[in-house]
Image (cartoon, rainbow, N blue to C red; front, side, top):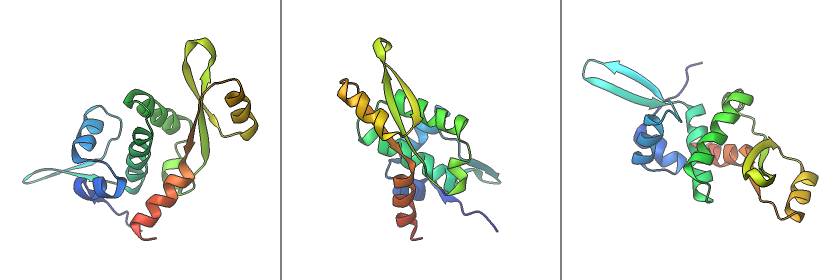
Length: 142
């Protein structure tokens, strides 16, 4: 089965981001698309797994995460759970504040931990890839 690829313009429309954001994320090495050398120059294409990465970044930035936190979260997810971006199955994670260091830890979603953290006045940031998958599938018409 042949994989479907998307142009930068198509990827931006589907993922809900701008062409400039795609370029910036590509330049920073956050999301690396497939680049094809042709006789007339370079063509940049995004795979379906790239679309999920783009949609996740776009969503996290839209809910107020900084670029650094969003890109670090994406990198951690790709390192810890690489199959998430190719399997078509989403999982739920959360970012929890870690004490006085004010750092965020990426952990699998646990309702009790989330409530306990909120009760202590610590932020809990949902990272629900299943919802992002669902929204992406709807946009792709599948």
